[in-house]
Amino acid sequence: MIEIEINCDAVQKLLNQAAEGLQNSAPLMAVVAARMRRAVDDNFNAQGRPAWAGIKRPGTILQDSGRLRNSITEQSDADSAVVGTNLAYAPYHQFGTRAYTIRPKNKKRLYWQGARHPARAVSHPGLKARPFLVLTPADEEDLVESVRDYLATVCGLPPE
Image 1 (tube, rainbow, N blue to C red):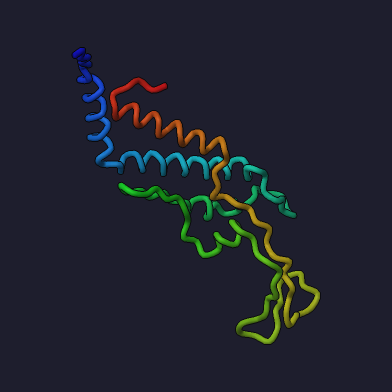
Image 2 (tube, rainbow, N blue to C red):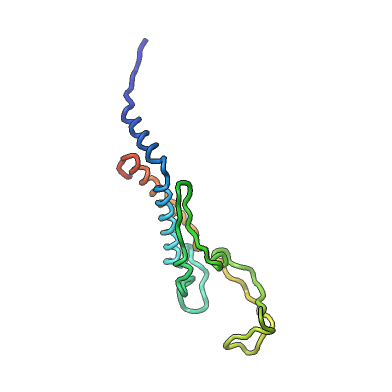
């Protein structure tokens, strides 16, 4: 009988390092959350990727006060990576709204500076969606590269 014996010590060592490094995936999820947060920042810097619908007055879209952009948070644990905001009006910008009617809550009529006369109701045309919590295909590729680099570090390999 012919036997071939292969010494797999190097492969086994690499697999053991990888398994040990991946037992706690919290650091990997932190890398993913940070990369997603950077993508959201890139969306604000570019005023949308693709470009958000314009606004009627001069200014930077979705950044009058900076409150929305500054509310973006990242969270991660061993099982997940999340980027988002808890601002009540954020979904209106992310998804847009249908046309709706504005009626007074505490008075009989609405009035604002510059209005010709008080009104019982005002028709609002709705908001165009300006999705800021999105990843582009390039962002997704960057995420894959970040995970690849992390795994290479965990396994003790040089990054590609």
